[in-house]
Length: 302
Ligand SMILES: O=C(O)CCC(=O)C(=O)O
Image 1 (cartoon, rainbow, N blue to C red):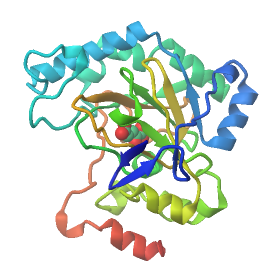
Image 2 (image 1 turned 90 degrees about the vertical axis):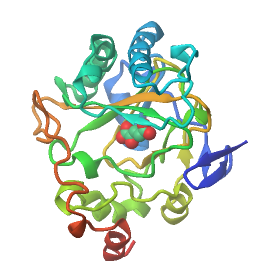
Image 3 (image 1 turned 180 degrees about the horizontal axis):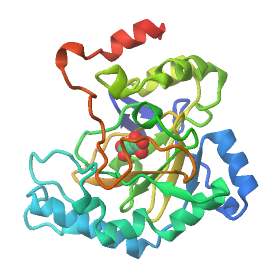
């Protein structure tokens, strides 16, 4: 089977893309084993962390919001998330009315999530108030990037938890990771250059290192790994783990949230915390000063 992934079609099971993300469920209650797995892979896949019933309640709230904005196909069952003709994607980053709706918050800030991170860090965890919640439309995907370029001003132990709000099989646009990209020697230069970028400070037009997933693995090595996610599963990864998503090739929305956790005692990136986080404040502003990713890459020799 071939999967559209950015501008490419990659064979699942071939050298570039596989559906073999490793489950970490058996390690969930063993801090040492979890940490060793994370140090090796740069991610942790936990199946069924959330009760599917709770995920469905959150999904219902997001579906109602899409319906309110006339983005769902008229007459369709809202939970199916069939897109209205011509409807595009939707991003509710920082929109507290929906990201902090009790049913959504019950998943994203559930005690099971705090317990998971508290155990992993061996100290209390905090989460950014800002949440990244999205409905990914037809043909859309996420390009290859490290999260550090968006949120690297605080804790070096910051982790992302990606939470699909419903089943997300590969054809709906599943998250894909390059295991080991956070530590492999071949990625060292990328970490030392692109990985030190800050989209607000440096005004680079795009946070994605590349829209082309094949370019990344051909150049730096590794293999994209993804899976068919089920409602309740989560994927945790670090700020130097290369990730992207396959394209949504269906007529339905993929909805998911990415949220962040770190040790509560560590410094916090000021853009994402507090009652009204400022978020990105300069990224993409002032077109005369924006630096293209091509130019930035030329300067890094990449
Ligand atoms: O959901 C997506 O497509 C992108 C998510 C992402 O890049 C992240 O969780 O950091």
